[in-house]
Image (cartoon, rainbow, N blue to C red; front, top):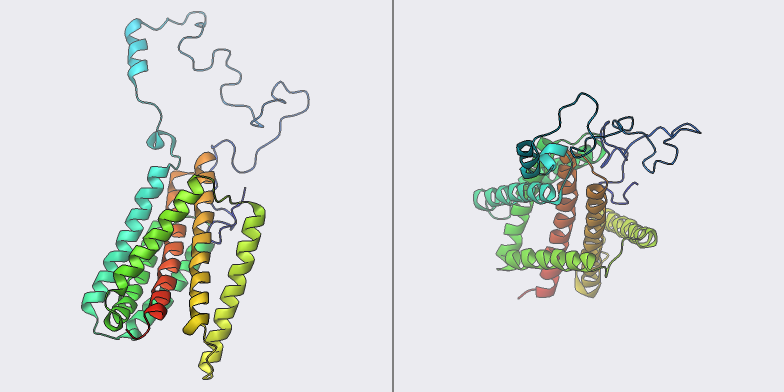
Length: 303
């Protein structure tokens, strides 16, 4: 199944490599085959083995039975985990996301302490390069952890510089935006896990339509600003409404991320796909943080 998340929806996202049953193209059994009723749609490597791999099954003629010590050793052996199966787990997603966010925060700290006040030149350049890298990652079929960490570093550097400017004008706004972003993430995670938010096709279509309209509106506002026109989307009551919609859309993207990750784990996606999940979560959190920063700036005004 293909996810509706913009990061995960392209061809090849969260797909297993050959050898993982249930993913990719499967060959249907021939009519009359004894495996025609196999729910997995293909015969397994042990289907012709009358005893499978069961150590307690009847032994084949001439085969020595397992001793008590061998049975005890097999019982004590650890179960197959992610290192043995090569499949993505929730722990993998958490670990990769933590690495990505730590890279982002570290780069932001470098920009905060190294750049002078109100230096938008390097921040703008880093943000533009980060956007290009994000596009490459999104359309690249294979997962590239170095590119994902590069994006996190560039985006973190840009956010650190911009946040320093905002914090100079409105002291304390940085921590307020961070806490607000964390609160949105926690609220969405709880709502999703408790079933209060269900990622259905209708929910996804409506959310994507609103997101497309929102982005189009911002593009029109940007073009108008280049000609000296001000639509008031980033100030006053209208700016507050736009900011709330932006944060709501970021929360919507998080719900798509959660659904895509849950589905990928259930279907046994390769372990390396945890990096793609981390990238998607980072994109959503960055979106929420930027909109939160803008909204708080509007609400605080000239205080």
